[in-house]
Length: 73
Image (cartoon, rainbow, N blue to C red):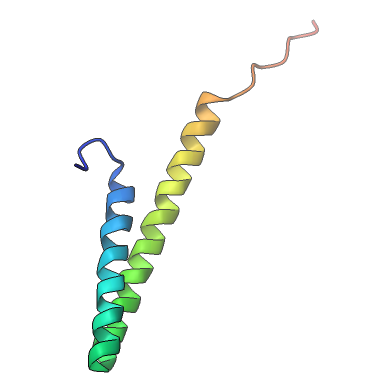
């Protein structure tokens, strides 16, 4: 399912699902520890998503680089 996906995307997706599950569990139980764990999972998800985005931008720039200008001499 995730074989051909970038690792940062997979980490972001899984950490986001864990964060959402923990926040729901935290609301149901009222546990501050679970709230804290959900924040940590959300931060990991955000960091992974930003890493994945930077990889996408770098690949796009590499593939869409304009040709160098002609030498006038």
